[in-house]
Length: 361
Image (tube, rainbow, N blue to C red):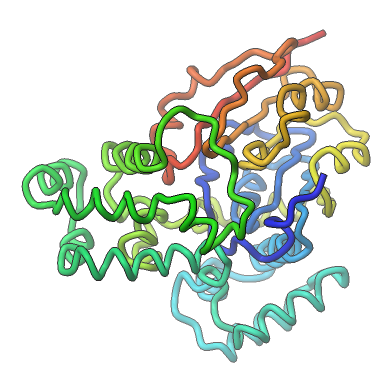
């Protein structure tokens, strides 16, 4: 299976909150399989000490970026890591010096050198198509909301935020913005280039995105969500809401896990990767690739992968604008409702997330 959207550097920061997967992953799992994405969804998993991690993606560039993230954790200090990626200020010549000190595998050296050279060795977290789209959206939001952007930066707790939303937030302007920006035509133009997932949920795009923000506003202040920070500020200004890879508490555990885990990279789709894997998988993090499955695959994919999963294996299934209503789940237990607290705290709320456990035969 091939999908043109996934063939280049689409993500460099994050488009989902991998703290969820981290919380679900048992300590010392035998074998984790995960979609690479920007690589930031992979790093926290190392903190749980898996014996083996298999990483797959259509895009060679996304795999290279994941390798770069792994090597920066392995070789740099926490502060150097933040500076290298752009969470904190760092001179470009220093970033180049760090890069040249890394033990990047030969498979990815040329690609990474080209990426970093093309950006003049600036921090990479805002260089993906997705991140650049959010920055463009933020410029529109800033133009319409004006000084209210500054008000959002000053909010420190949830109660204060809810009072602000009730009495001061420009609700009509916000509804207009969501209607304009939450538009499939606009997303196709900015990001998907005709490959936007085909919506099968029975609500409008406007309501879908409005509901996303309603859920975020219910549980998080803007400082606590990298997605809200990108939407309102155009960058991650507050580390407390940055992607989970920036956790100082996790950093040394990620470094230890990387040094202990056996790591394999696979370029290609999930199913071709599974054919190349022999060790049973104990944890599978799909990311949102399920939203792009063709109809002939989406009903039966859980049965297709089942024989590759170990008993009690956990799968984390994210869906964007689609649900697989006739999914064959024979041999699985839906454990989503056991983890509602984790789902409510997910920092993007973009996806419907379902969690399954493979049952013993």
